[in-house]
Length: 73
Picture (spheres, rainbow, N blue to C red):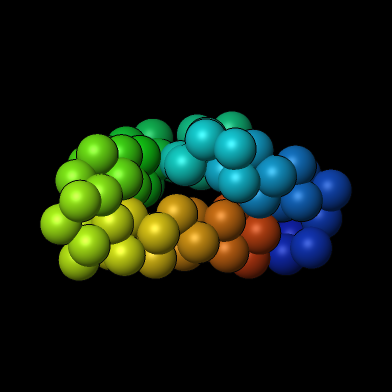
């Protein structure tokens, strides 16, 4: 998973689509995975307050994009 657009990044993005933060975990970025997971789940859990749900949706989308665009140093 060394380059943007590689097969590993595509798999990581698909994993993040189903489970926020899983793509980052597959890439070995534990802290980012935990952050995306916690913020997204808390946002979705507070769906009746609208604003946290929107924030959760934004972080979920961000986790997918982040997993797809990750470039290892």
